[in-house]
Length: 225
Image 1 (tube, rainbow, N blue to C red):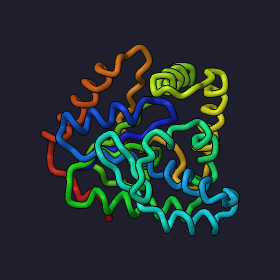
Image 2 (image 1 turned 60 degrees about the vertical axis):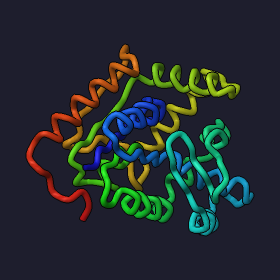
Image 3 (image 1 turned 180 degrees about the vertical axis):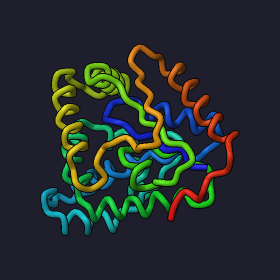
């Protein structure tokens, strides 16, 4: 079974999706971490992020390994580094590169093949897994999402500025919604869950209820074509 969780930046998708996967006994696929890894690799290589051929060449050389609570890039732990605001500020052009997106989607499908997965990102229910049995679109107001991201960075020991996070987030929302490759949009058959005023546990309980109701229903078609 594939459970897709899409939504805008700062909606809390990664943390709740991880806990959802743990509760269900599913593998957790953090697709945002994959794009952050490519961005970090390009920054380290000092290539022009506006050069699609150069960034694609770097992406083709990246080995990304996802495990519970950790991310490795070419066998080196980058779990904290990919969450740095400098990476978030530079991810736009990488995420908008159609060839890199296709490369990542193919990797995502390979990872999830033959196993139960909770996969989180922007286009999982629309592009990567259009036939997923359960699709969820997780969202919240811009201010609430910025507050959560600000606190997350502080808790991780990373200096952050709320106003800057809000500005970057609004810009990213606009970019994500208007890009040609894998735009941010709720799939027609996705269940929209607005999380303002909800604790993470309340959100998790709601998602568990949704997934279990889908899982007890009739069998679905295969998740990919």
